[in-house]
Image 1 (spheres, rainbow, N blue to C red):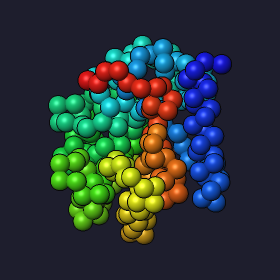
Image 2 (cartoon, helix red, strand yellow):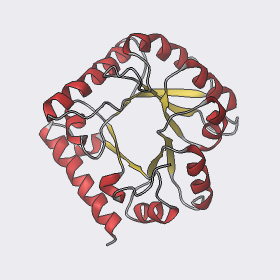
Image 3 (cartoon, rainbow, N blue to C red):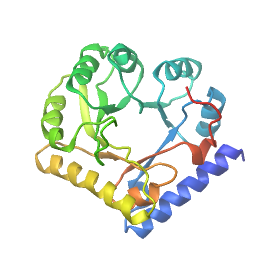
Length: 230
């Protein structure tokens, strides 16, 4: 068994334990392997161990990597910032975009999504803990943006994503995640058929699952530390 396979197994065990503690079924939480800055060989090792969904932050790096891995049946999620000059790459190459936080970006993604591809699956990134310089739509602006994005023809709005600042105490972290869960439930109550709440990473996935996350984004615990950041 490779190191990556062993670490994947350990992450799945953490997810299962967190689900058990929360009274949830282990298969109620999906794992997204965050492969940013790691080469195609790392993705191949993870795929060989059963992982099929991968998250990438750096769009051009991801597109180059996809070209080298086109022989594998992988699902690619954009989980990094999306600027206007990169929307076409996201629309043409990714299956999911989890970091939509402006209507302009959503409109460009919809317009640029090729007709032969299924709709781009989208999560709205919400600035759940209120950081002034952080990406993400503010909670009070979320309902209007969600309704507008849901109406775009080449996108399918699936849910919310958040990247809150770390908290020293697990309970404080869970409280932040619970705010995101409440926003998600409010949108569902408003009639939007959402099914994805993407929150939780290597260091806080237990708190996220306890608060209702059903998709965790894990990189370091699978692939190891990153020696370089673009």
